[in-house]
Length: 100
Image (cartoon, rainbow, N blue to C red; front, side):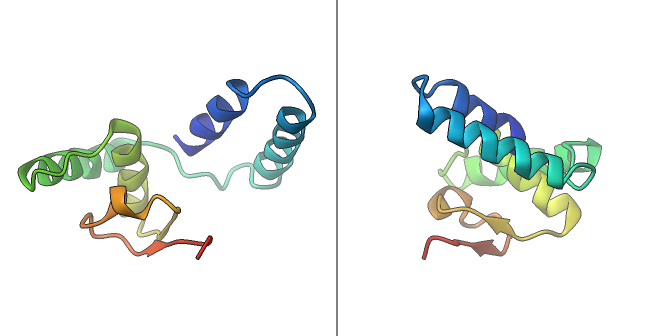
C-alpha cells in the first residue's frame, strides 16, 4: 500500500528535476529494503475490516488506503510513522510523527 501511494504521488508530479529526484530516492529506498516491506495479507485485511467498522461506528470514517496501511501495522504489531495523525487516531496504533 505505501509503496503504491509513494509511486502514485511521484507519477502525478509534473515531469522535471523534482519528480526525477523523488523517483531516484524511492528506487534507492525500496531497493535497500527489498524483502522488508510488509504485505497487505489476510491478517491485514481482517484488521482493516475492524478499523473500517469501528471508525464508521464512531462517526469518523477512514479512507480505504489509510485503513489498509493501518491494518498492515496492526496485523504486524508495528508503529505507524505519518504526519497524517488525525486520520489514524483511535485505531489502536502507536503513531509517530517524524515531522514534529
